[in-house]
Length: 381
Image (cartoon, rainbow, N blue to C red; front, side, top):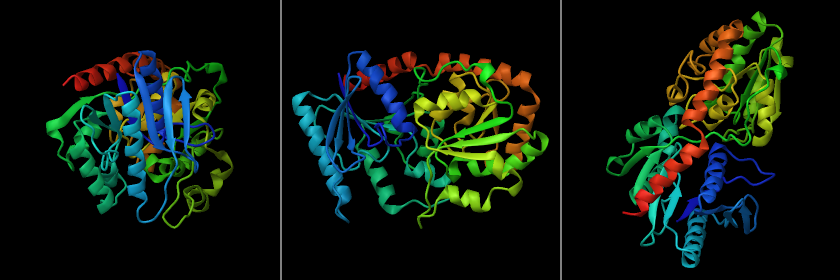
């Protein structure tokens, strides 16, 4: 079997990437271990064409072709040409993309086309309180029409997207994102730094980092040793203004300024060190499709605060394997964090259960088999 994933987020050393890229690399490497050929096709991070092998995964990074207003057409033309070329050499069984990825893909007879929903334009528009961009909305609808099967990384992303796009006739199963148990290990309690709260993710509004910052003065008042570490790449407003600078200039109370540290982008393989040192990992995002970053923390057996919004309850059972809060309400964020800092015994019990749960529901050796089962079923039709 030969699977071709369409993405420009596949990790490349020296360049930042998001959770989708991390997840896809984990899945692709493990599919190869099961004798499945995997190709990755997407745009390069730099202005050149490259091919690379990543533990058996053949990565094709296409040279970006920029000519406004035809960039989109040139991009899909490059992708279509590469898919055709690969298919002629080694026939492809399945092409998989995220929500917008199939919009202008030319379907080749014999290949099945899948969408794995990780949260598309319609899905996130509501959580970010913005309207549907006509061009992106058109592309997403067109992409869904081309798909032979649409499946998701959580019940929430499937059901929420169904409110905007009708794909009920081609709806597939839920397959969770796996935990990267190669990089993330059981945390050593002796390395814990008392009072340290750690956040990792893109530093933007929908990740809940602003509410975490606004809640922090109350934490600092009750637990003076507390400090907040924030790891992640910056996000920029349409006018080019930095979100991190916005937080520093208007959202951080002067009384806690010296106790909040922005670490900048941290490579995925370096995250365990920061997670291990934290007393609590707090990722109170407003909306996720299936938060891979949460699963990474839970796999290390750490006290964790997530969000009650979106698919949060599919990952966290409150008071059992972690805590959840209303991520859009800084008062609730502060309340739950104070409860956690006041009850270290409960934190230890939840952390132990969290690691056990990850091995039961999110381990790659189990989830890769579910992916293979789906691919076999689809390609045999």
